[in-house]
Length: 323
Image 1 (cartoon, rainbow, N blue to C red):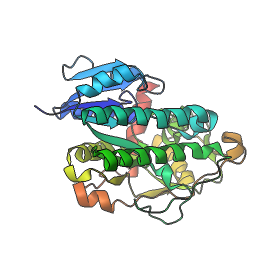
Image 2: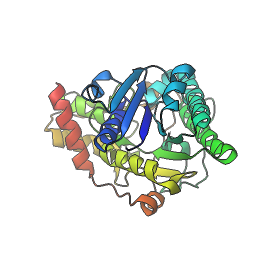
Image 3: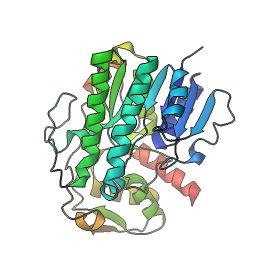
Image 4: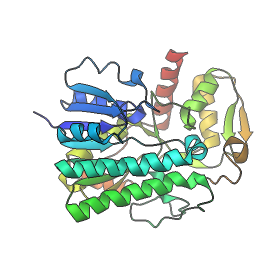
């Protein structure tokens, strides 16, 4: 029988897709989520299955986490405060959730010897100007006076914690740095740009582009990302390592908005919104965010299959069904 996997944040966007994939691969899967950002509807179709269990609880409930970890072989830790808007508006929640939650997961996993995969982020590269970003690059953070960098700093601490548990206690830990991941079920509530643009386009509303729109990103389909996560969970040589997971097709945010308008057949226009109006005075953004995928490609043969248009068409179709 295949291993039992505990997924924190399992009702979230990436978590729900991962639960679905792993169940269909024959794993026994338990998802824990307090539904603060995850949604029950994301996993409702899995709940009748005997190989899936959902627990509505926060990962800082040490008694519940202990019980679930004691029965798991692998923990995939996705639970986190995410989204630029949430991070700027509620920095205390961001820091507490990310650091305390990860420490709780690692401490509990160490008690039972579970393999742990920790979801980190491209944000840890900060203002890095060397493109593409490689896993061993130096990082340049903004001032602590800008709460925008609280997320990056908290996830960097998560990485340090995970690798420290590996080096000091021999706990099998893998760090995954997610770049922009997109697909059905992603909420635009906390600033995720693609679902926000798609919903605006389908409603005929202006697509609000922050800043000058020349900042660029690389968007990976969630199906490619969860395939990589599953392979890293299985591969013994992933332990103790850090891996970028994303895509390399770079697009400016302005071009992204115009592409979505075209694919959706929308009459929407682009509206430029200053950063200080969208977020907070003094907000700092990264101009480019492009991953090197050489390391993960060498280990598991990761090569994203979905093009940007494929991704956008999937999201448009999903959002059209929800109107």
